[in-house]
Amino acid sequence: MKRSTNNLINSIALSSGLVLFAMPVFSALPPTQVGKCTDTFIQDVGARLSDGSTGAPIEGSGTSVTLTNGIYLVSYDEVAPLKNSKVGERVKLCLLSLPRNCPSGDNRGRFYSLFNYRTRQTVKLLDSQHLCGEA
Image (cartoon, rainbow, N blue to C red; front, side):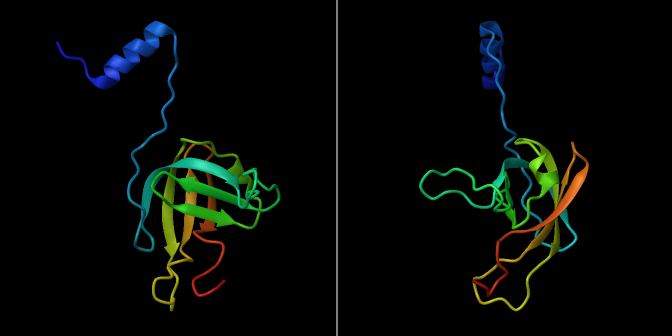
C-alpha cells in the first residue's frame, strides 16, 4: 500500500520524537468588492518600520501585518489587538472601502477590517502608509 507524503512525514516525525509545525498555506483571494470578506492567515506581525542596516524593528513606529493571501496592512499607531495576534492564526479580512479618483496604477488606500478568530478582536487598517496620489 502506498503512503501519502504527509503520512510519511508524520510517521517520520512521530518515530523520531520530532514535532513539526506548519503554517497554513491556503488562503482565499483577497476581497475585491466593498462589504465582502475572505478568510486568510497571519504571516507576520511587526513594527511599521525597520532599521535599514540591521533589519531590527523600530519600536514606536507603528504596526504592520502581512497575511498569507498577499495583503499587507499598516498603521502609524501601535495597534495592541494586532500585536496580540500570532503567526498562523486564521483571520477574516473584509474590504470596507476603495480609494477614489486615483492616478492610473496607484491603488493604495484600500481600507480593511481584520477579525482574529482566536482573540475575537477586530482592527481596521489601510493597505498603505499613504492614500493614492500622496507621497
